[in-house]
Length: 143
Image 1: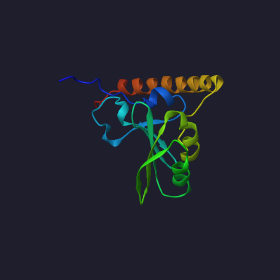
Image 2: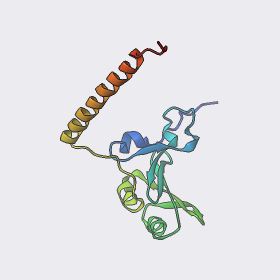
Image 3: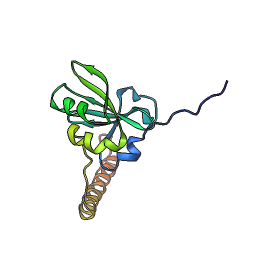
Image 4: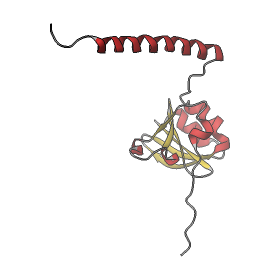
């Protein structure tokens, strides 16, 4: 019996992680960085890997967003329920689907903002370290 090579899905973190927040399905517990369980949370649902070539989208409702996604050429609705739709689409359609479902973006800092934040946090780390070390030097026994 010939064993086939395991199918590796589209890695959302590798493909979209620099721009969008990538989370994991709640079933993620104990499975370290499994690309099958990656999701991009969106205002109107979420996007997930469906196969090596397709992404899936699940909407939070059946309103105009779900209808617009379902009408899009190249999108196939695989599940249509009272609470929304699940559909699959080629990764090339990601920008069009994302425009409708509104993925949560990562905060993008300029080089100057990043430097200022680093300096501000470094000062806090130093003062916290001094405070915790001075607390350990205080005697604990009553004189």
